[in-house]
Length: 164
Image (cartoon, rainbow, N blue to C red):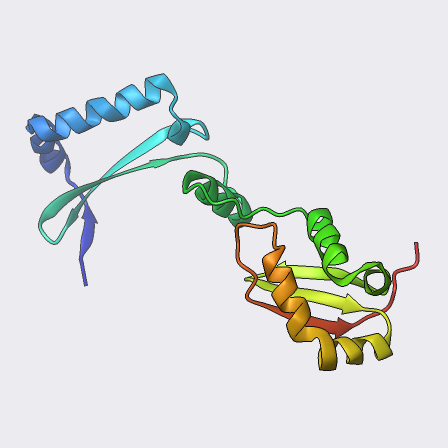
């Protein structure tokens, strides 16, 4: 396991003489002045540590804490992954695949981790879909799937219609 400790003042002053470190620090200062995306949330914080005899420099943006959901959304955007989805779009796709009769007695409950959960309001329809139509619906829904994230499976659950 790596041992990590803060640098002493003598080690820091010695490090500042190194042209490689100075070049890196100038790049950090440039980013700070230009206000690149990484620094929009706050000031850059530079920390230097001695890890197993080797000097490591860590740069991170200081700022207000962000929710994990926001961090993941930003990471997905950075990697060009569109993981957001529109529930209305999924409901319209569901209605096109199963038809208006079944869609009136069911609704999309959730979509998490590639698993689409459908809430069915009639127990007779719930059994009929699960026993006779599940495979065909899953195949047709995969063909018409509008999202970047793939549809792994469909789960059905018996539920009550919400009164408006």
